Length: 130
Image 1 (cartoon, rainbow, N blue to C red):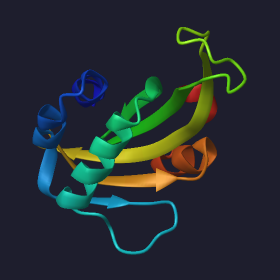
Image 2 (tube, rainbow, N blue to C red):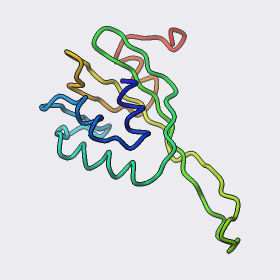
Image 3 (cartoon, one colour):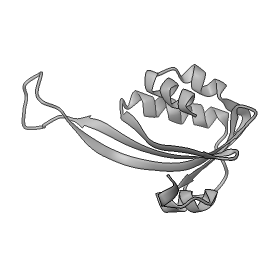
Image 4 (spheres, rainbow, N blue to C red):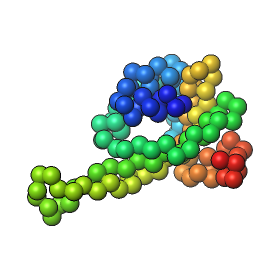
């Protein structure tokens, strides 16, 4: 998981893709049909192009499951300041919670969650354990 995180931050989406099983399934918070490899690749490329700063806050393994908590932040220009080198501020865009299933070194499934507690409950962990 850490190799995938570092590859994504570096923009090495080829390495990220090599860590996903060919039949990987990614389930969003809203439910519905899972995303496959093609859609996952498009979403990751779009997220990387947005130039967000991604910080991995938790990465905890339990058996084949890995709980992930990420924070994304972006740069916001001051619209009232027209100087080319104005001070830019980082702001939190959002938080992400998910659980990835890893088998034989490949990510086979990812489930997104609306909260850290929901992700913890999914893998049977207590917040005090992380």
